[in-house]
Image 1 (cartoon, rainbow, N blue to C red):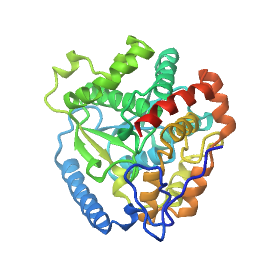
Image 2 (spheres, rainbow, N blue to C red):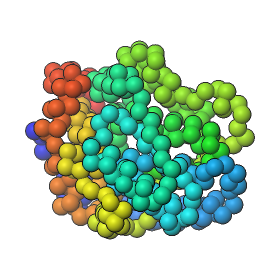
Image 3 (tube, rainbow, N blue to C red):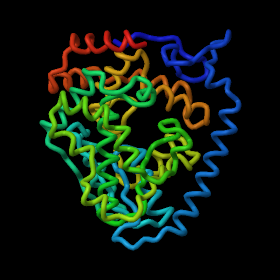
Length: 350
């Protein structure tokens, strides 16, 4: 059972989150920051104008206008619908199969792509290599703790592979856009739309990638890099756009929008996921090692935006799927004592 922490009385940020402070009423410094609300709204509005200009002006000479990162979760499905029906983009949906997608999520993926009539491709890496990456991410200090405030180490490794593969596909297909389904709160507002810079990305990943290679094996490096032959043949990198961040929409409204496409809620995932069974383990390890949930910032942001209630957020955090988590721990040969060891390492750094 995850230990309960003191939480903000307005959102769900806990006292363990780095840099957070609370006033005498138990309200966190994020909720008290009025400047944050004004700046956030202004940045989102500017991003909306930038996206409109890009979609109107960018040349689209390839087979697809965009590669859509498509996990089968509610947010990525709603984003896929936005890209095709609202923005009229011709897309290639791309799914990264980490071996732990819910069976129902896989069915959702197929049903929705058929309902929308779009092309779809799945990348399923060697399960031996991928499980080595997942174990290494969970049990070793691969990433700087300050980069894990919004994401668990296991998810960060998977997302890095997703981003790298999506960029590779965009370059191969000549697609000027990559569409992602992050929510407000999962990423900073200034990350809603940006032009990819692979060279910078490669440099920033080098240190954790070397650690991963030492533990999981040198063969895993290829999942995080783009071949030089492809890089040397391009004129410009595509833009990444997080369309969902431009929408003022509640989770319930998203569910109402995607259910006609055949989407069904999986029952074998934790409260913070709608597609991946592995999330329950990733969150557990994150909480044990860093003392808080990687979803606290996201859920609290949605609360402050009026897109989620505090009670709904607490229910998500409380739905840990312990039985599913324990099953995955056995599959990956991850023990409680091994988690204790890495938790002790991180505790010294806190």
